[in-house]
Image (cartoon, rainbow, N blue to C red; front, side):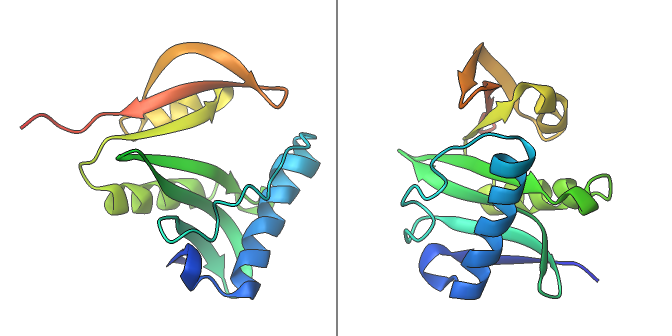
Length: 146
C-alpha cells in the first residue's frame, strides 16, 4: 500500500533524496526532454518540505514546498509514468494543502496541467511563459479572507 512520506531538507536520508531526484530527472529531463539545472541548492534547506508517495522503496510521485517570502511555493510536482491515473498526484496535492493550510500558495504549472491545479483552488494569473522550453503559467491559491 502506497503511503505519503514527508521530510524537511535536513531530515532527508541520502537514499530518499536520491530517489526523489531520480524520479524528477526521469520525468522532467528524460521524458519531457527538458535539460534544466535540477540541483538548484533548495532541496536540503531547512525550510524545504518534501512530500512523496512511496510503495516500499519505489517513489510514485513527489513535490516540494518552499517558503518564498511568506508565500508557500509548491514545485517539482511529478508522478512516475506507471502511477499516472491512479490518484497519486491528487493524494500528494491534498497532503500539500494540509501542510500549507490557509496560507497563500503559488506554483508554476505546465499549461496543460492547469485544470488539475484548479481542482485545488489555484487560479491562473498573468500570461503563459516559457520555462526551459515548456509553456508554464503562474497559479495562485489565495488565503481565505477572514
